Length: 436
Ligand code: ASP
Image (cartoon, rainbow, N blue to C red; front, side):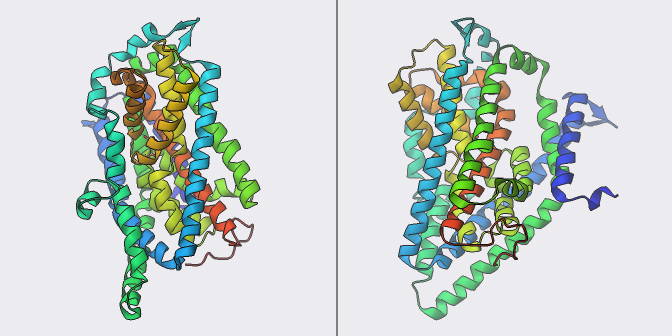
């Protein structure tokens, strides 16, 4: 059977496996026919990522505007908004609790009863990279995040990826769009529905290239993991890595499916199946914003959730609901604190929990965004922000895992909220075509 006849998610999965093999066989200097492979992976991967990112602004704007307009009355909007916010807060909180319990239980920052600071010194030499990645962030960046919610210039907000600002404006726009004269409102509504449908078609087009894009992105990550990183991963960061992956797995394979089964009364296995393309894309791109068009497509077309719910819940989720990120921030901050021998009282841990909850709302859905939030936590508990350097070696790979969890949680939210709104035909065996 031709490889092109395979289902898209199977092709992406194969690309991922091949990428790991190719990445292991090459190093950053390897050349093929005179071409540096690392640079080639970088080029192709960036093209794919750019194509997905190109869709973010139109998809967020059009889906929120049509979503809000479709919800109708202020009461219905308030109800849906309330449920969405409650779900997002609850799942992020549950994720954080799992992370905090796991990191306290495993104590990856303590080796043979001693803080692992010395051993970690090995990778602390990455500290100079930290400044590049996170800039100079202190607690005031938290207020800035919330300030950017009301953007002084909507075009600048869109251009600079300040999606919270874009969402805020689109919410207002959609709300008032239905409150102008009928004739004008009709024109507006049809226009934005058209934009939305066009972007969804463009998503399908971009996804045709997903296997190649995913191959390049993952091969680049694997090639970039130097021997030094591998050494430090095994020696000192191994336990930390395992703690994060196990906690994320607990959230994705225990907490969220339980919520799906109890609150939405749907079969979680069917939901994993419906979401597989989006999850693989989230894993490879490490960006929930870039994955958003796909998340919408999978939840709408495969799971069968209405446009009314997907177009409101998912863009919000991709920006403010980051369970994996919240969990990771806590585990990483507490791990670093343990390694530095810092006394972690209940109050300190509670502070970490609160900041993680808040910052996970504010961090952008782009690769490595958590690092900024972790530096905010570190400065709040009195550690130098350069200390985040100790986890850089494993951050990118963990980013892939936490982004998949972020996206999965958004999709579960859409299903649970849609069911609570009385929608039927979601994730059923022989589902009717979802309403468009
Ligand atoms: N990469 C994550 C996302 O896009 C954010 C993070 O760094 O945790 O969801």
